Amino acid sequence: MRAQLLLLLLPALPAFAQMATGSGLIFSRDRVFVEAQVALPAPAPSEDEKKEEAPKEEAAPRIETRRYFFDTDIRPEEALKLEWFHSLANMQSGRAMMILFKDAAPRALPLVKLYKPVDVLVIGDDGTILAILPNIVLANQSKLIDVEMPVKAFLFIKGDEAAALQIKPKNLVFHPLFTRNPTVLQ
Image (cartoon, rainbow, N blue to C red; front, top):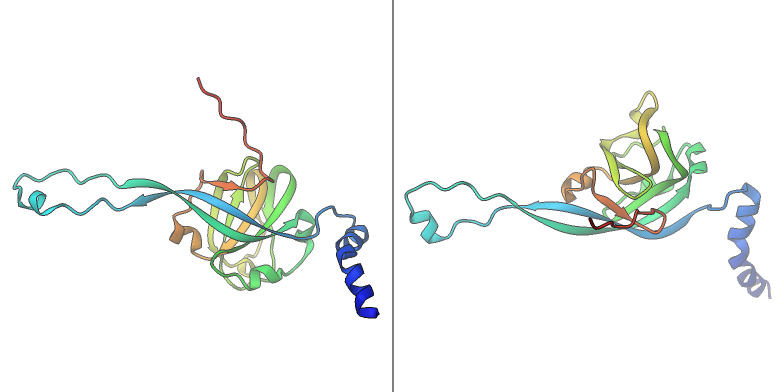
């Protein structure tokens, strides 16, 4: 009987947590993806090209668009008051944690007790990666890191993962929380 009552009340727990904290978003888990422009090496010269005596210009690398999916814990800006994030302590490839702000504005990167390196992607209102703080150990920071650009979210991924996947500023992060302006053809 108690187990059945507990099963009936479990779906209501997030609502009770919301009422207790006054926050609309406590914690959610979703997939976000980053669309990156990846430089591929130029193809190796064929045997015929190797036999030619005249040196040729080296071919430019090809650019390919790749999408990288991250299972992401999405937390509201109120989470910045915490000193430690469980999600970051167990960071693995393909996992992420995002701090989402109500409005895009200049922000300070939180100082938390995290001794593992992470890459911090600074994301604008439309999902554009504005900057990347690579391989940073947040616990080693002696002062807040101010970001002067209008930040909508900080996306934390495993340290050095941005470089390994060739994720760069101006790449895009896709999730319904980011609103893009419609494409205008001229």
